[in-house]
Image (cartoon, rainbow over all chains, first blue to last red; front, side):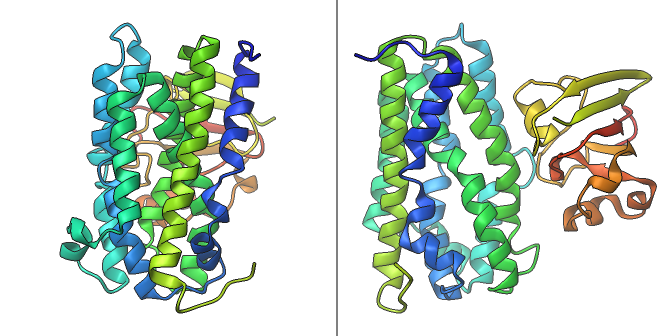
Length: 238
Length: 100
């Protein structure tokens, strides 16, 4: 029978829940890191990624609205994350589009929802469902800890490759640079919210489960990108 | 563990952080050097987190393209963008309200 964990043990459990399903292990991420993708593959990635991360502030806004008003700091953290995604500096999706354009696609193609794969639509729908229906603390665990906090480790691996192997300029890959910093802040804020407010055995267990599912969803999404756009073109090491 | 000595408007604040720490990430979750470190976008664009390194700068990696773009000549006077650096060793920084 599960017991209530202290914050240090709970954090370790959350990290372990994510670790086994890290999107770093998907064939798309491996091919990316090995420099085997073409700019056309990366363009398809950007056209899909836009529809997953583009509504992130929308997902958080649903969570924000349902977060109890007595959790002032948690609400402030969510609001800060939303602000930084959209208007804190450059809009993050504009930087994604800049990268997409350097891969040969267009803003119109990126923003057109008809260009995302069914699996991407599934991930986006899952994010909306979690934001609207789960306990808000559990939703933060799923969306911010389970998904967003993975981003720095993924981009730390991928960004040097984009410069050195794929030959992109600093400006073209700024989307990835900024996420190494901003998602680290956002992910940490997510951990703070979850560690403080998941204060029952049931909530802790639900947070662990949704982190695991969130990581699975991201892995599913990136794996599908490989099958949908890359598989017929290249092979990667097992 | 790196020791951070932070000068702000004539006051000095000292705190210990974990290795590989970004001070803007810490401030973003309201941990030292919060609330003393001013920052804005967290993406190397606004330069609100700019600080002058008083000691320990030799242990930092070379300024990246964003720092070069935002700080220009101030780099040679020891200025860095805190959002762009991860600390592994002790450092002494100064940030004055009108400095950024």
